[in-house]
Length: 192
Image 1 (cartoon, one colour):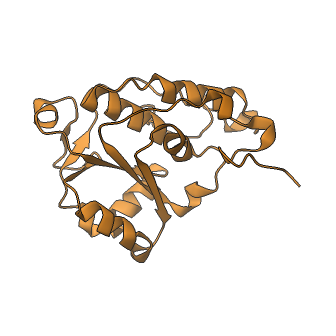
Image 2 (image 1 turned 135 degrees about the vertical axis):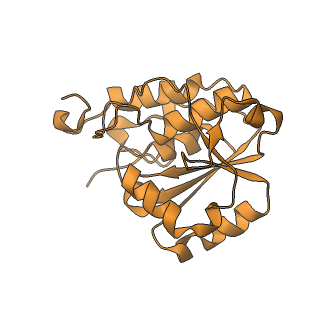
Image 3 (image 1 turned 180 degrees about the vertical axis):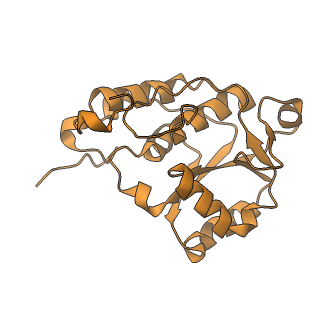
């Protein structure tokens, strides 16, 4: 039986603890995670929660799975990172003039994130933000047909950097360390 690190949750053979650096964030991050992502070895939402102290991850698939998250979010002026019809660029002065104290990210494949957004109708009334100038993804160990897709970690890092002026290099370094230690099939890597 495989043993896991009690701190980072990764297998002992690929423990990431030596690569953890704490990020002090002026914003609280809430990640609404599709339940299928929670057990993936490639789960970058877990990496965000290991680095960014003010991060809460709620996992589920049904509306009732997120009742606690809804209560939590409704207690703050929140914004949602989601490229909806009425979303605005996070790079805009609309964001920088009034950055939300709580920022929500959806974690899952594009279809899973869309499904969560559709089911969690209470998200629809929140201000929504998208990325106009995000760098290309450096996340290799996933499948996607969309070249502009970012991992949840990369989305969090970009939002922290651009929206709040936070040095997000520790997140990128942690993702890189995870990829270097990846023991999964090469076929799971982007471009392979």
